[in-house]
Image: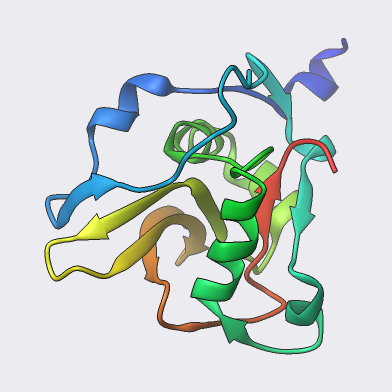
Length: 150
């Protein structure tokens, strides 16, 4: 792999999974038993997935969650992958994910107030910013779920 291509490669950071925000009281996502995730990713090969109806306009986040839960969150990113992407050069992120907020559906969190939030990553004011989004909100075409595989 050339040095030019290596700028798109990132490795998962599982150690961040213990660093959830203070408002989180638990994780509710489930993954396929025995499902393995790649050790290394090429951001150019990540599929930015939308629920079919989401391509036409906003849909409730809970509907997306239910669809992905029925698939046991197969191929979805978690917090570890978002943290790894955040460590990439911001120009790489802009090239691949410009104007998008990426969501970690594999790590949907339960809040103290008993509602669910999905961790996210976006660019704001020239910096990578970690955030989260309430599943009670509407999610539109610019709110893809990064997934490996199709």
